[in-house]
Image (cartoon, rainbow, N blue to C red; front, side, top):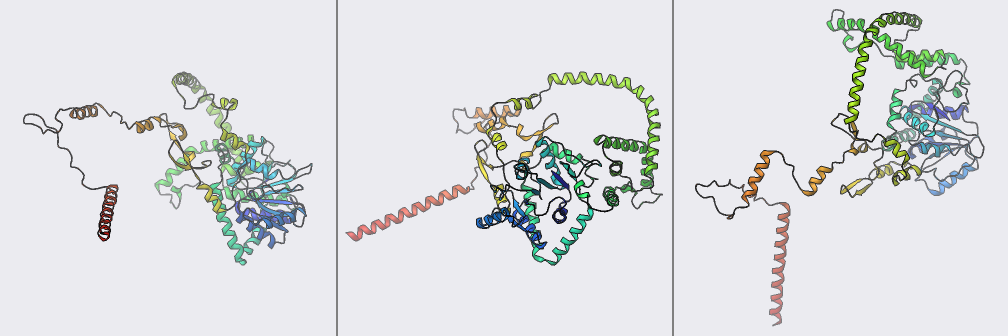
Length: 551
């Protein structure tokens, strides 16, 4: 498994580079390229034909005879590249497949296994290459959780044939191909229009694809090694001056990660301004704390990978410390930070001894409070929820069905929109709801409890309000409202209900005037009744005339 981390705009250039120089894909080997939509399939097919690659395409709305012809060509090795979608490749059997390229990474782990499982069959070797953009990295983490394997990052000891590696592509390869593609788009109007249509279809696909797990999204955001990821070993071979190219990539990565230390209060400010002097004084006071945080960041990066070469470690340090790119002062800054750390440690050790006794007393008080909370706190989820779900014998039918079935995404915009508009009747809520709420924003709503904890909205059943609506009851608002209700009820128990109030006796208040405006239904009803009367009279007149004529 080879994973290439890149921008989404560079995927086409990387594909042309891989197919052209035969670094990962051997010559005349059968290669299957998976795309998300049929419009991207048509666009890639046009581009590869322009560069004289022997290729064909498959998508769901293609004519069945054309599909059969393209598959037969691929079987007989008249063409060696087949561009397909997941829906079109379903049921297509290709026994001697060598390479699978995921131009768009699948949103579900089972779909990845369905794609890649076509290669390396019957004891043969196979190669799976995936292009990973920033928004697809969380899906890659979901895949490795599903497979139970660990994702590897390239180091100096990593070989080119190692599996489960994620790396970048040398910028020199990408730049050359991107220039060629830009020139082709500027001269070919048909290709430019195809590219616009393909991009629009991909936007529709990203809106409808399932979302990755929340844990994978959190890990993807916290991943620091992606900022300065080294080149993949399989693509770093074959160029002269690898050291210069690597230093060039590090310089470009440092420029990308550069963040100036000046704040908005110091922009275009003079030394006489008050805000400029305040920020300078603040930085002078908090500089020690900033240095400690930088040292902690360096320690975390060293703990992440102990096998990294020093060049890559320096690359990570520059990315997270966010210092300006100054190659001459790197070593002096490091030495000064080490001496400052030793000095601060000796000063802080005395303060820690004094605070130690206070912390112990605070810890004892917090443990007592936590024990009291555990006795009286009622959680919204049982403590043994996950263990009970794992040991349960009877599972939900829909969850079992979802685990046993692979759901393919449609490859056309019209079908994607039609699928999102499907509804079904909900017997409990007495209305139509979306048939597939998986991955939608509506299913991810959360509510805040009285304790301030955010929980999924599905835990709020609202049974009491629904029971009140069903019985048409109103809650008692207070003693005043209850007294008014009793007075109103007593009025109905008078003997002479229609009698007017007598003198000396408190009479009830005047009733509000009756609304004389007719509703829409009343007007329609009167019109229908008048129309019936008119027809009845007309029929009576005609019958009387007929009787007179007969006489």
